[in-house]
Image 1: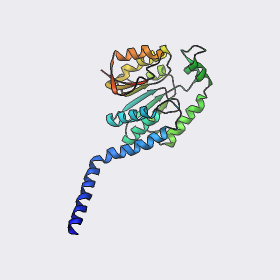
Image 2: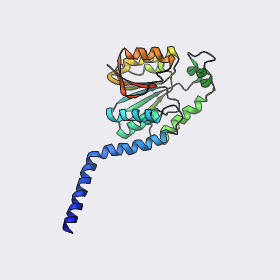
Image 3: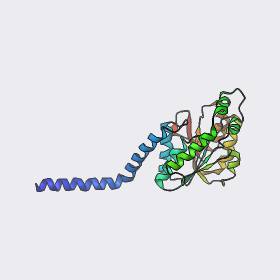
Image 4: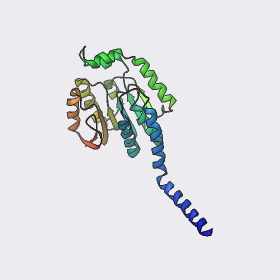
Length: 231
């Protein structure tokens, strides 16, 4: 009996020790699982794989300032803000005009993108995004900047951004201007997510990014969403 009690006591001590070593990681895994479950219900185009990789990057690097260009209803802003909330520090600036006129800029009238954006009720989407932030208690960690990217760029100092996510207007001119305006705002060693890199209209913007950043192949999602790190 004494031998059994000693063995049980030893096992209990071992479990406490292992929990102390892995408690934070286990808590993050549980939190992330719940976050990804909720993220599936948010309208948008952020896959579960992308959401997880974005959240993990934040968990690993503990950024102070994150910026997202192109928010829509928040399918990628949510995992970013939720990861910051788990850490209890940092902020996401979510930039989007939520304006049909702004979304149509750069596209020909019969372009499928123009036809789609012309029909969207972006005022309702904006309200839905803000409601989601309040419902999930994320307003401390995410600030919506209702503006086009050009006007919003003046809000940030050079080399002030830790993680930048470019997923705004994908017309050739605006996509290129976004990276030209915001790359100087990104810290050296900072990370840049670029969505839809396989679109023909983003080719020039991606080529520009590659002049100043190196590709993180391991964290990138195939040929659709690439992660770059600034040199």
